Image: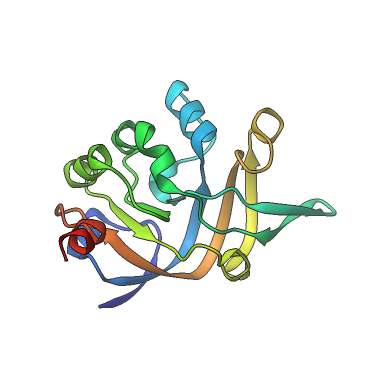
Length: 181
């Protein structure tokens, strides 16, 4: 099935997505790689609400244009690097959508089921295509501390995708299905 969604996604909708579904999302997503995950888990308060957005495993290439930022490239980064954080991240922030590439491990798969979240895959090497779906860079956090790729970028996107539901909230995994075949 193909779905066009506006973020945030309600838990009831997240439950209906199955492995292989194709999503296009509009609304806000935030980028977070290793260091951003670590920082967010250590802090009691952060300056935005991750629950209202999708999490994008991405280290974008940005360009400052006057007082605004422009996305040059925003391809996904390898999600398995975040496996050591992701289950606790999902638990703490109750995110409903993760965008990345390459899949996640068993700890994350269990957290996706327990806290009702899906992992979607975006095509690697398509950073320019992803950048084209960004309407606006709304904010950036921890740029000075973490640097451009590790900073948290809040992006307003329109019809961002295609995203393939690769691990759903019911324990199904596209990666495990492929290995079985």
